[in-house]
Image (cartoon, rainbow, N blue to C red):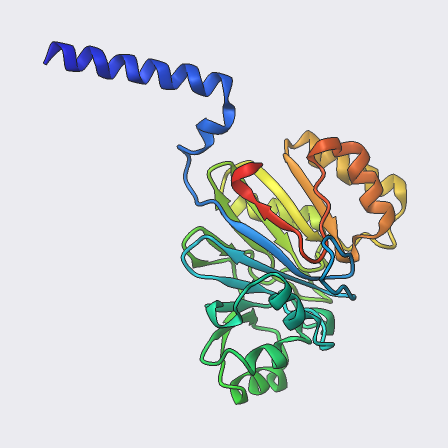
Length: 271
């Protein structure tokens, strides 16, 4: 018995020393799951063979249920990019829509032609006509008002904003929270704050549309520096963030800036 106890102690000591030299090994012990995030629709292109146009969509895998967050526009590019990524629409378990704008909901009709009987999570404030259209295509609207758990390690911020109502997603990984936004109309800073209220953990990554396209450089710099000072580890502005915003975040975050675009795959376990 004494030898066994000594051996166990040595193992623990070795693991502790290993963790000091490799901080990522510590995160594997934390709560959450690792995710694979594939950008299927964006106005930026990351990989050849994918099509890009104004809008956003992200496929989220790793929680046991595959989630399609937003569906881009209605130009057929979403389905093209599904094929280009080697992904099967039939394996999507649920759709989550951030807000009502066409560049985030336009691709849903075509998508539902190949995947029926699916739940579509949307802000409660969505128009009744849209909800009826979803039902007519064999899907089930699920109305979201307050912050809520969607599935294991995935939460919605709930409805945020006043003029344009929007929900964002919060994923819990061993390394911290991943915040995914459609357009961030309510304010990217407020969305991050809400995410940290839902789960009191540091933020590993903020990604998606930051809605800073028409925001002055000085103000964008303030936001980027605040994010860095709050120890947000990675930033990935895209879609409606604007080229100027992307340049600022790239400068301030350095190698912790992640470029997005259609075809980009982010493995949270590698961050």
